[in-house]
Amino acid sequence: MKIIIGGALGRMGKELAGMATDAGEQIVCGVDVAYQGQEIGFPLVNEYALITAGADVLIDFSRADGLPALLTYALAARMPLVLCATGYSEAEQRDITKAAETLPILQSANMSLGISVMRQLAVIAARALGDGYDVEIIEKHHRRKLDSPSGTALMFYDAVRQAKGGTVRPVYGRQGLTQQRTNEEIGLHAVRGGTVAGEHEIGFYGNGEEILLTHRAENRALFAQGALRAARFLAGKPAGRYTMEDVVGEMLS
Ligand SMILES: NC(=O)c1ccc[n+]([C@@H]2O[C@H](COP(=O)([O-])OP(=O)(O)OC[C@H]3O[C@@H](n4cnc5c(N)ncnc54)[C@H](O)[C@@H]3O)[C@@H](O)[C@H]2O)c1
Image 1 (tube, rainbow, N blue to C red):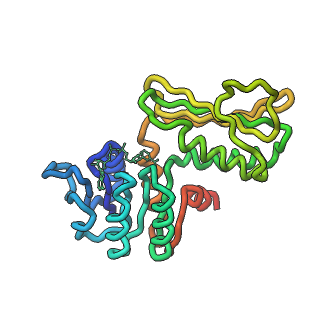
Image 2: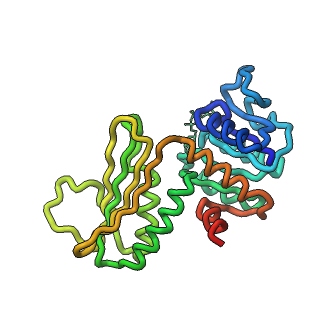
Image 3: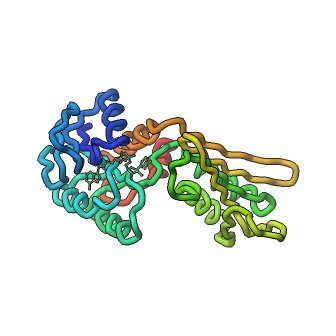
């Protein structure tokens, strides 16, 4: 597979480049606004418009605000996209959906296959266990993380909420509450400290039993691995908007 990497000089771009090379993939070009002649083993340019190489897919780990230039290039070059940057606004999400009428585009704020499988397990558990089980989500991240709860915890909340029929609401922490928990709430709790790469736990607490789904990220490699898996999935797919759920679904079928 021929790959172009967006954000090639960043932490994830480098992680992905190393992993793709080890896997025998060919990196035909990298794009990074910080490019000033650095040598990293494959050709680099500093804007998407300067890409001349043909490829099967562009995997982007740059920044959400580079989206307009990226989509302009991809639409002109008819380039399938794996979008891994986080923080797209609602307007940017709409632009991605519009471009996906013409191109195959897979976008996910969490490229980990394990997280995607855990989401599906949580949906099964929420449907099967029903209202007799209280759901609480706990996430832990390193002390430098800015947002809380994490986007992934919110994604899990949303999946469980939908599986339960949409009648629940989030309760962030429990500070100041003086009444008993109801069936309509899902607790979300964030822990911040040290160098924790990322941990998510979804607990289903029933009468005399607990079911705990836990995912622990040990390093950034799993995101690069998931992005490569997503790129292979996208090869040859028709235009449309895809997610990591589709990748897992194809693996299961
Ligand atoms: N989806 C996932 O699973 C996942 C996992 C990890 C990180 N991320 C996201 O990936 C992105 C990159 O993360 P990182 O830790 O590698 O950050 P980073 O800051 O180390 O790297 C980003 C790179 O992108 C370059 N860049 C910025 N704007 C650009 C533009 N308009 N065009 C081309 N290059 C541009 C920067 O110069 C930098 O080298 C972030 O949005 C991060 O949140 C997603």
